[in-house]
Image 1 (cartoon, helix red, strand yellow):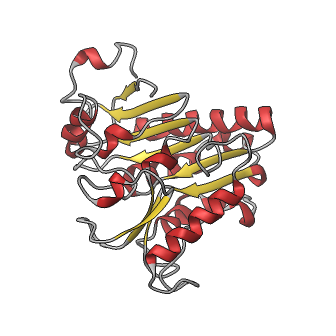
Image 2 (cartoon, helix red, strand yellow):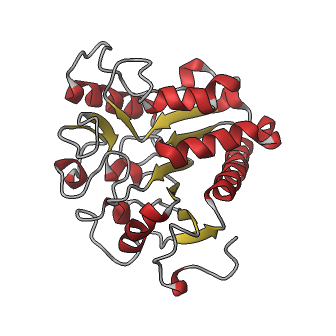
Length: 260
C-alpha cells in the first residue's frame, strides 16, 4: 500500500484546473514512455468538473487523444444516452470535443444493451473486456491504468462501492453488479477494490463541505468495509486532491504547508 499524498487547493475551480493540468502531464509522460496511456474516469460533480477544465485547457492538445484508452470506474445501469450515465456526462464535458479513437473508449454496458437488464452479466462482460486488454506484465486481470480517478462520496463511497455492501467486500472479481445502492439509481456496475489497486496511480477527488467528514474518516485509519475510500490506493502513488472545504476536518499534520 502506498501512503497517500494530499494536495489541498483553495476552491473547487482551482482544484479542477490543477487536476486537469496534472492529468495532461501524466498522460503525455505515459505516451512518451510507452506510446499509449490508459485512464479510468469518474463521474459526479468533481469528475465532470475536471473533464470540463481539461476541455478548456490550452495544453489539452499536447495529448495524443488517438493513443489514449478510457475506462470507467463505475456506471449507472441505465439506458444508453441517459443523462445520468457517467459516459453521457463525460461526452458532454470533454469526449465529444477531442479526437479519440472510438475503439479505445470503453464505456460500461447500458441497461438496454446486449445483456438486457442483467447487471451481473453486464459486469462480467466488462471484466472480460478489461482482461482482454491486460498484458502479461499487468496485475489482477486488468490493464495497468496510468491514472484511475475516483470521486469520494459524503458516505466515503468510491466508484459504486458503498459502505458495508457486498461489492466492497469483493476480493476476486474485478467488476461487479451492484444491487440496492443507497444512492439512486440502485442498480450499477462497478470496479472492485482489487481492480482499483492494480492502477499505477489512484487519484481521489473531494471538494465541498459535504465531503469533509468523509475525507477525514478515510484518511484517519478507517477500515475499507466501513469507509471504501480508505481501501482505494495505487501501486506506485495514491493522491488525494481536495479543496479547502473538503480538507477542513483533516488534522493539519496530514497535508503539507505547500498545498496550493
